[in-house]
Image (cartoon, rainbow, N blue to C red; front, top):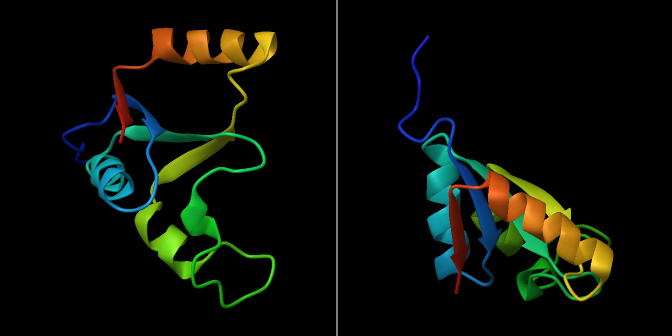
Amino acid sequence: MSTKALEGIKVLDFTHVQAGPACTQLLGQMGADVIKCEMPGSGDATRDWLRDVEGADSLYFTMFNGNKRALCLNARTAEGKDVLTRLIKQSDVMVEN
C-alpha cells in the first residue's frame, strides 16, 4: 500500500471562494485530513453561486471543496471556542484567505 506525501497531517481550512479552497483541496489530494470550518448561517458564499439544483451545493463549491470534511462552527460562543481550541491543538496547519 502506498502512502501519500501528507498522510497524517491535519489541516484546518477557513478558506472561501477560490484560491484558498483550491490550495486546501490540493493538500487533501496529497493525503492531508482537511477540515473545512464554516460559520453557521453564512459559510462559504460559493455554496450558492451558479446553483443548478435547488437545495444542493453549487458545482462551483463542490469543484473546489472535494477531499475535505466539513464543520459548522460558531467561534463566537463558549462551546464553539472550546471546539476550535481543541481542533487547533490537534492540527498541524491552519489555512485562511
